[in-house]
Image (cartoon, rainbow, N blue to C red):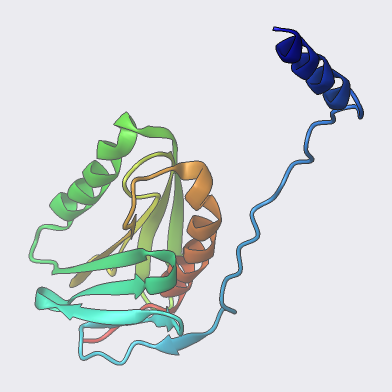
Length: 183
């Protein structure tokens, strides 16, 4: 018993040396490749710039999967020709965004318009732990309808993926701004 008390006393004396301070906040250091773009060289009814650090997977129906292997993410592009169904396509695109309201903290919309190239649409940002944080849809209002959605191959944790979302968002804006329809 005496040895036990001596051991406890020694531990208390040793541990009471320096004042304990909280650790300073650490910041996550993420490095992303420099932004650079190439024209999409696919035979599709549309063309736009894609980031150099991506890989393109062609899918049926003129759809694409633009993959970001290092970020474990993709932008899924769906294309639909307009056949007197523009209203239905717009409703469907906005409905897909609103399905995320269950997990979303906030949804914001931004209109997009390029009269010279006949590209009109919206970009939607979804904050929170939703499955897709950014989506857009664009059309020429006559023949073409294109939708893009960002997905990560992991369980969504918005705070952790926010820097990657902001990085890919720039690429998605570039896609919209450089989009050209082929007739």
